[in-house]
Length: 374
Image 1 (cartoon, rainbow, N blue to C red):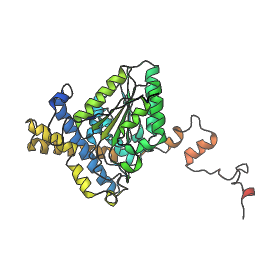
Image 2 (image 1 turned 45 degrees about the horizontal axis):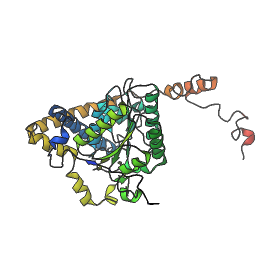
Image 3 (image 1 turned 180 degrees about the vertical axis):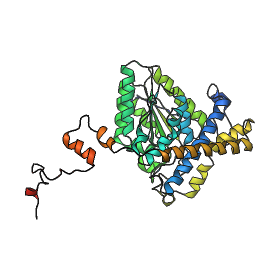
Image 4 (image 1 turned 90 degrees about the horizontal axis):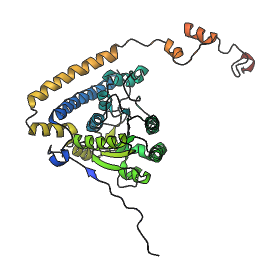
């Protein structure tokens, strides 16, 4: 019998605003207005300013390890703006600060998180998101479960989860994709392909030509976009969210972007990245691209740039002041948020901050005097 083709696939790449700030008017139709673009550009400047200062806080010993978002802001802002604030749910990794801010997370919470203060993970009531996820890939399972709950409750809500190209090599990714597709839950999988899984280049960690094609195996709509193009990110995410909200199931977006800084402040990317590669991507910086577009339309100039940079510095200074000025947490929290009811022994520990009874009970195997070797 003749061989027949049982399946074919195609993956589209979407770019609407190129590196020179030139817009494809046809593709941009019904996406972002000039007012929205200007607002989001100003917001991007502020987020970049916070990112740069966070780096300095770490270097000066005022904060722990920090992963910069520099160069990837269009991903978070475009996708975050496409999601419905107060309705949809964001399930982030740790390079989507701008999206979290758009959906109501106070900026100083991010600094608190990286300062080691758990109150930075206490998401305010009414803000629909999970805390930052440091383990690679685990959050995708959470997003799938949240989206399944939306479907079971018949709520017109969508979960969007963020992760890097390296996370698609994790088993959690495949489990989440399979579960989401099989149950057709309203979930958008947003991959920020910044070319590097810490120090491992994308081509060394996978043999597929694109990351987007991994979604094909799960029967999931998929697209590749220019991740430094605010318009393309917004359109692709909006389309995926609308499809999910209408009952069309999950979608996958591969956003091709680049982290202009190190993986984290504990990394030195100069040891493994070609400086020419970094320089080439600097020219694709989403901030530079948007500024060229706005200036070309007469909506922005050097004076406005200087004024907003000054405004951003003031905003960031207030954010830092808030984060560093927060009262120290009570040690009572160690007990009150761990146990529903405290035993007499725990009550004593809470009051004295000592484990005075430790090793005094022979029943504590290995600790009682009868069990200690001389």
